[in-house]
Amino acid sequence: MVNLIRRLPKTRLEHKYRHELHCNEVMLLPYYVAAMNIEHTFYEQIGRYEAFPGICLVDTFETAEKAQAEFGFFNPENSERVKRQKAAPIFVVMGNPPYNAHQLNENDNNKNRSYEVVDSRVRHTYTADSAATNKNALSDPYVKALRWASDRIGAQEGIVAYVCNGSFIDDLAFDGVRKHLARDFDKVFVLDLGGNVRKNPKLSGTKHNVFGIQVGVSINLFIRKRKAGK
Image 1 (cartoon, rainbow, N blue to C red):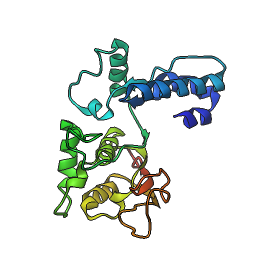
Image 2: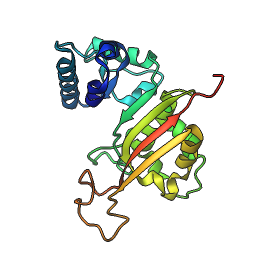
Image 3: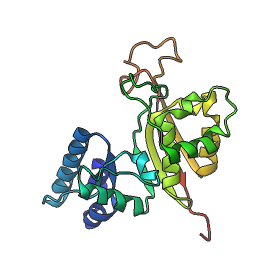
Image 4: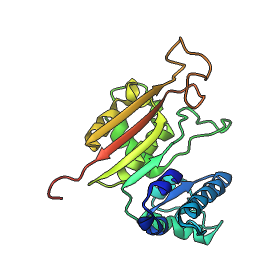
């Protein structure tokens, strides 16, 4: 978001900042840090401070649900921001979704949550079209993020730009994901950064990974083009 604000022409920045840029954060401290960074970057570009109205304290997947509290108990203004974001057309989704496929236990540090709408979409698309026997990996949040973003940008055109787990590139369990990405988008660009310690016995520790983790990472652009006559 910060880099985007720096690259936007100043003649268009104020309108974009007030009406067309949105971001979500579910943790309170990162929410405040993100808001401060965005607002400071706007100040650097325009020369005056203005609170960013597009940041929401909300779980992004919850915005796809039919009804949710939307943190209204915390701040009514935040609830209104979430409603405004849900009603807005979104053509570009950027993010670094988390990946923790098997953390389903209450004792895990980051237990996966269930989401009626997003989980249903994953089951009826990626899971249904997978030939794998073991499909547990499809419960990973980054898989849900792929599904959510593919649906959120709409059917006509849009871009999804993710830095995420690279396991969907060639793992058997993700054959349904690959099939739908090829079907849902006109162009797919994948930069495999490698770094998967579990797959490559020559690697050890975390020094071979761009993020200092043991899971492979990829940079991805999924592009949907408007068809002629639409």
